[in-house]
Image (tube, rainbow, N blue to C red; front, side, top):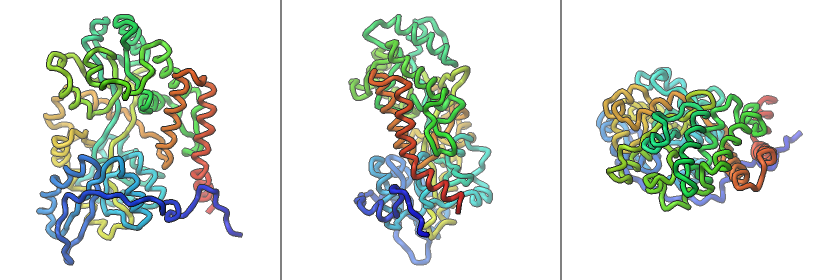
Length: 433
């Protein structure tokens, strides 16, 4: 009997044939030689420009290898990769966002790296922050090596916190609530305690990841948003708006986040490491001593945050896997990662790199260093980005009063279950094969 595929399952060429190939800028290209290995390395955004600079010493060390670095814009990278997968033109080595790793692993496009890592004298598992290494592990196999890490924590106005009667940032939700109440009472009705932009899903995701129950259940087959834990996270999030601690707005409705933070429009802001440089650059000199970073508070102590960032992956289609791994190893050296941090501000994934004075002595980076030991990966399913969008929309409906929490989580589970229909079919098919 011929097996029936569910409507969502189609061949990769049929599914991707309508995509238009997008232009990318080749920025680090050496001349091809018939007696050399030729590696194509795709990197995204600013990292693509920096990679071309970083690999110059690698080319000197390995004259038998040529490398072409191709820079992709973040807005087009995902589509470009899918187009290349459909056309069998994927590169050898690639910078892949951590949340994209499960998707390309599900397509069987990624080369497992466990054997490479086992034999490596450079990529030492114990030197990596565990949560980020785990984000690259799918169904027991390691598919990526973290290149840089990203997580969310709190930026706060410590001068306003002190004026409200607190000498240190919160470590628990209860302490946080006390501070939010006190700041709101101090700044009045026209200002707020915290900014939680309604067009960002990350703050709610962080709160949900702090709960014991996952947001997806049964190997990511079903939504778990009706669980008591997610309800608690969503209720805490919604409380910040209902009690007027946070304004009901997106970040595009502000003149800009940095100016309003400086003006005291809000005192807490959940964001990533890139804003260290932005606050240093954009806030006036008289405010530079009045802001700081802090790890996320949790329900009963230091809280988890999300494991983001990007990793180095090798595609199965590569004809030069050993050579691509040599380049991945080179980019993973602590001294190369230190240089990478200097050029980009991206946080390194290795503990040994954090021991360098530049990072160890940074008062703003210190909180990120602490947070990196308390991260959890978002659900490792290819459909995660669609699910995150539905989660954000459901939360916005609750905040705006268009839905109750009970109604929102029921609808959210129903939508997510529909999104995961193909995944359930594939997992069931794999088990019965």
